[in-house]
Length: 105
Image 1 (cartoon, rainbow, N blue to C red):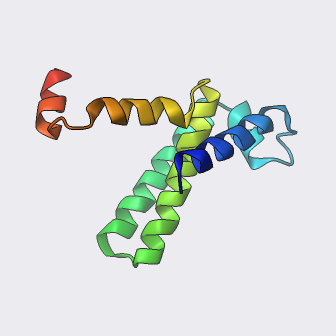
Image 2: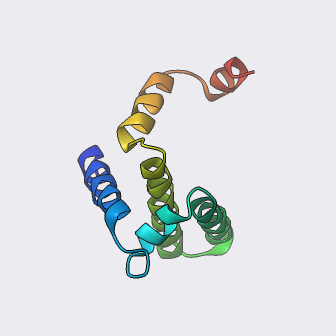
């Protein structure tokens, strides 16, 4: 997966804003934003934790894909894109995780 893949997926999700929530899962999430999206992120994060603790590699990948999908829906709902997240990761590149966390206060 590349930055381009994430952008294409985010673009496809953004198109779902106009879709009928009764036929589009993404449109239903967006219609209930932010709570519907945040509930799903919490659920998928929990499932990722469970898979990471004792699941197979395939289960971990599956749950992370679900988690990424729902976080992309949140970005779309907020008018953000994967490029915004990648820019933040670029900003942090080369900085110790401990130093970065300390700088946030």
